[in-house]
Length: 613
Image 1 (cartoon, one colour):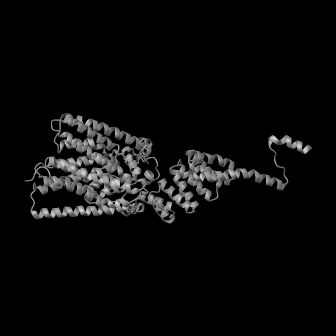
Image 2 (cartoon, rainbow, N blue to C red):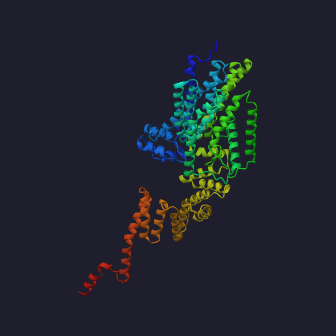
Image 3 (cartoon, rainbow, N blue to C red):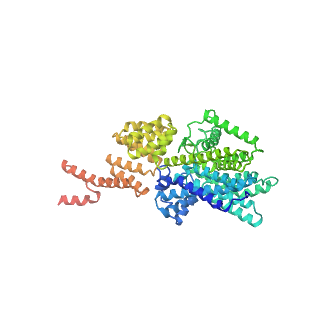
């Protein structure tokens, strides 16, 4: 007889097997390092998270790095540092373990939801369906970015709390009185920690409402109670959304509403819904960067087709909601989860990103698990041969997903490979050309860097930052006249950009036009008075112009801003030496030409007396 609950061995064998398989597939990530894309800014050049003292905790809760306020995530990085120091192995290990834990939690959640959605299915079928759901989620190559990229710890951590929130909520729904209230408090606590890990889970209160409709069926005749229950979740979500919006606007800024008006935003949002669904079903052509085009035309083929697909799916699922309510429930939760990163509120160079699927595609895994449970339980008639074929196909599919994941993990082990893969998928990715060019330029591979920068400028000639990068590379290549041309054109777009103005000063200095160079660097300091490089450069120029005394003032300002600046300290020593040596040279010149040395005002009378004697 098939019981309604899995037998004892299955209760621990299945989740253990899921965890082991997940760790085995993502084990290659453990050999990766910090990649020079956000990892450098977050970890290599950031001393503030290193440790678990009061200073680090305060910093985690009061700072926003690269537009993200994620204090709980930062505390996990602090713990990594306390254990591993700057060894990236430990950071990767935490990411992999979090992902394995999420796979197990999804298995537990799938068991709970499938039992409610398919009460006629047997325990073995439910267990099999839940296991397939968890493995489909865990082994999918779309997960590689969130797991193998240390910076994206926030995806795995927030999802851990998201799943914990839902599981505690389901437990509360089974109880009454004080036990119910206690589980609701646990659920709210997990949700709070999740929001402090990444604000993307802000849509969870609405997802809980969908669960109340299906499969819990709690909403019928109890809408008032169901809605009141969600108010604490909603308050947390709204508060986090406001804070995240303000932090993002204050630190990185938002994508221009003029360049991307409402029609474009709608097209971007519909494209996102179609994109993640398509990549979940056919995970090929994955890349670290899918660039936002310079202009979004809603009638362009990829946006128009996406819109038609999304609208068509939505209409079909609404019409079929009575027969297949699970399909509509999953689709609505998917759309709600994608919404915050769909382009309605946008920042950054990406149109879409694999990491945005980590949370949003959980429903697709549950839907697949439900389908497996239906077939395995015999609720849908299928011959034994067909069942064997479907089982073999499922195993091969999961194996294929695992193989693709390992291939995608390799991309995130090497910074060059990130941009190589992105450009293989989209050869006209301007952002990718710019990033790879900067990486090569910093290594001194100027010919390769110039090729990427020139391609970026050719693709988007009105983007000042690409011309500025090209100008800098030309400076390093000792081609200052060409650098000057690009930097002047870049300054037309951004006339108050101190970095560009400073680089223009360097280009002029390389051509021997020291007076013009000093003027441009002074203008740069007018826009950014604390620009250490500009202060140091101006000091060098003033020394070369024979004004070392003035140079000292600027170099002392540079060291006041950055006491650790070795170039400023070195040039200051030169300036002071030149200041001392200059009167001596003048005196030597005066004696050689027979001209008397000017007397100091305080010694004039004494020298007159000496002459009279």
